[in-house]
Image (cartoon, rainbow, N blue to C red; front, side, top):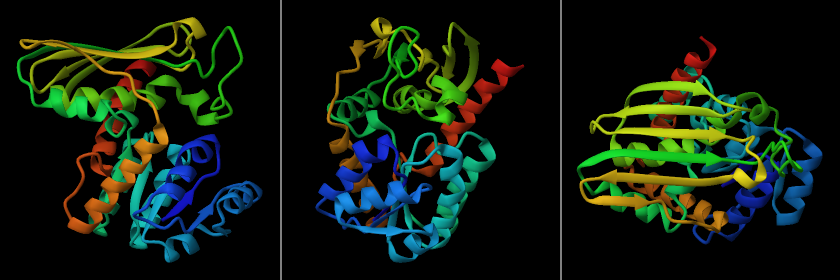
Length: 291
């Protein structure tokens, strides 16, 4: 497996998880900043690549830690080279690019998985599967309020990210909320979006089950207001998303899922097609905000 990207997310999660994974070999790194790629490759004793296509030629699978609209065209090239795809969210911020990734994975018959933290971390992943087995859902509410760009303190390690500054919480943490709401309540059939302070966006969603949900999303929350929560309400009661930790271990389980899909030929439900659907929903919400 090769890694594309050298930023904080790659350093804190992707690289250590790939190095620790027992079912695959961490082969090398490519980055847009050659000096950063060389430094990270040296840390893990792997090859540094100056050309992403050379990395694709040497690898069976590739992991992406890149901005979404850099990731998407490279993922299409990787699929054409026969590489299985471990993608970051969002897959892309345009419907055209996200569909191109999903279409390339299908056309070239490569496996794909989108790393959606709540779908691989424990105990949240098991909790989602458990709730998806229930019926009679009435409503749900989610909030993901990050302090990446807080008004009252130092920015986070992920603040030096032009795409996050430009696209805000809708695109960065919106996929997380949707990745839980959709498998439990069903696909989204209608969405409305409204702005709040800072980059706050509130989504109101209708699902195929008939249930309604809301999601409040931001990267610019005050530090004292930051937090993540999700609550489901239905005929069987009220169920709250549990806490989680150890993101590198969750990433290792995403690698496991990719290898399983590659070996069995059975598409993972968290693959590029699901990533494209998330982009469609978020793009529809963004259109309303700009209208």
